[in-house]
Image (cartoon, rainbow, N blue to C red):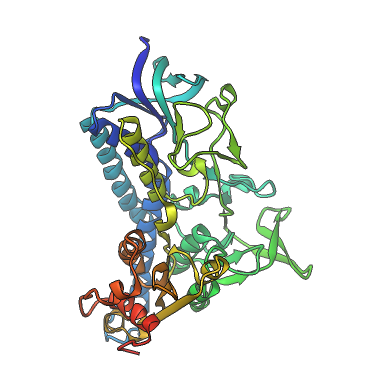
Length: 468
């Protein structure tokens, strides 16, 4: 094949990679992107989007089951609810298919050349791609590494073990029947999101977590409503418990509690969700001299690696491993390559957990603010006092604002509640624009909406809440 030359080569078409390529193309940069699977990466194809589709379907089904059981205060009744999970999965696949085609179309519209295959560095400017029709060599002035991450596999529970009994999140999002008994290893956001969904779909779910709490990245005040929902759904949560492997016949998960008690957990499927690891192998890193930051590629505030002309974005560069962080990085790098002056500030990256209820956190938590030697004010407003939440039968949770005591600058915003992920933009914007408590309290929030809890939390911090 004839060698391709370009100004920008992007390796990986996940959120960070494809956004980088599209923006570069829009700016007139001669851009090539290499992807060995479908555009959109893990997030679009086997992660964020499909998981949220299944979570939504499970929510709707659970509501219908509650109606059939007469547990509906609104008087709505339903008879004999059922779900065809295979059809649900086909609906989910239709969504991801549309989005994948959409990304490919956007790349094409931006003038980006797509090369399908596995890329491997030869040197800091040259990459060889294994394609279906042979090797394609690409030389580029600038290269962006956007190889993403993969599920962490436990040595005692390798994926596919015992006749595909042990699965990753990818496998869980392809099931055509809800397992009667599902064991989930790991009580982080992936494990709880999918564990809750399958509990609503009818599975008997047991969650095993080595730490002494669920969702360790969030403070306990935020996670308590999720714990109550797990209990209400009959999900057993075993904290301080380590998995040991499979039973000899492969029918059960073996675990050990902190006190040394042996646990035998019968399971039709075992979903392992103990985190994700950056994909730093398989693309020729050994041919380069890239500094590492632990297991991640080291980058500066402009996503430059230790080698001139090589950038890295997304999960391969460290925490938080979030699609929207990768997108922001990718857009910035494209503009830098085009000649613009850009940098970014990660303080306003929202972290959202799509559990039931949902959790969101932007900026500093109260403990983090105190650790930074700040005198702070905290305002918290419960959804039980919010009219819109009442009409949605979604009174669990609250919004909390953390601000400096001296000048009322907002340092962080957290919340837990049904659908609260949709307030993430408002929360992030407040941090990004340097809002003070008076700015939030003085902004007219539409009534009746859940967003009123945001304004009321600021009023509470100022000492004059109106509705509590």
